[in-house]
Length: 340
Image (cartoon, rainbow, N blue to C red; front, side, top):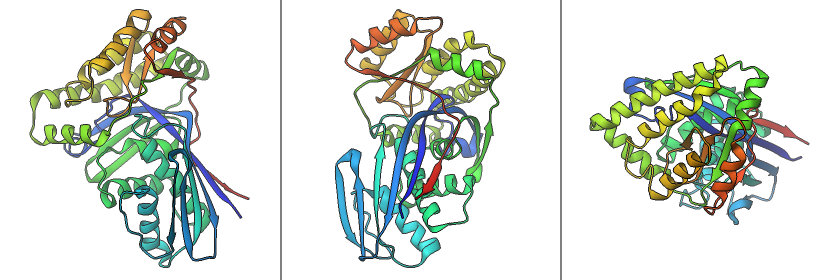
């Protein structure tokens, strides 16, 4: 028997950063995101030899450990170990023997939520294997707890819920880690046009999002006026984007993205830099009407809204800067699991 799962990566269309505590706890956050045809994959092959094998194919890392109730989290494939430790502690109560193979379509630090999506995919495979009684909200919440509480990794809440639920969602974040996922009913032609006009560009750089997020968190804690005002504006941006897409007013998207771009850079140092500013201006000069750094900022993926047929000019201009453009398609389904 083999158990497989896959969970989609996402782009945050608006409101990015408002899902991060303490801002979301104090003021409430709002994000509009959408899942893409890029995935994190997990395969579990049960074993009875008393060993655990973790094989991260995309990272070229493989480790073999003796099956125990708790594994040492030492920086080597910590996500997989953290998930195993939590599930054994909370549900299984005994060591498990298996091989876990993982792969992610985007590199770590890409800004597409790859780490959190991988956690959801791995959790999904274990839930399928062990037949655990966990629904969508349960899986997303557990993925968040493992990353943020058990493993002490800085970050927000949107990625785990986007990967689990899939589709285009307006998400609300409140104190005590309350999350509400509102799926949006968008006409097929609007979603197709939105996808056609989006250019997803990989800058060929990555970053440690935790550094940027911790700086953002400190600015909120210290009540820095510029950071708070910018974050409030990003929450407004999420509502603006939701209304524009639901009404089919796609001509407003460029301006809404620009509004977010200017405010995002005020949240913390390191979100943008001269290279990213140059990429943004190059896309705008080639015909894009607005754009965004995906994720916390500092590198990884950027995307641009390119009305009419300007996507081709924008693509050509961006690829001259050394990065590359990936095909972008929005998908509706979130976490999928199966066995054979």
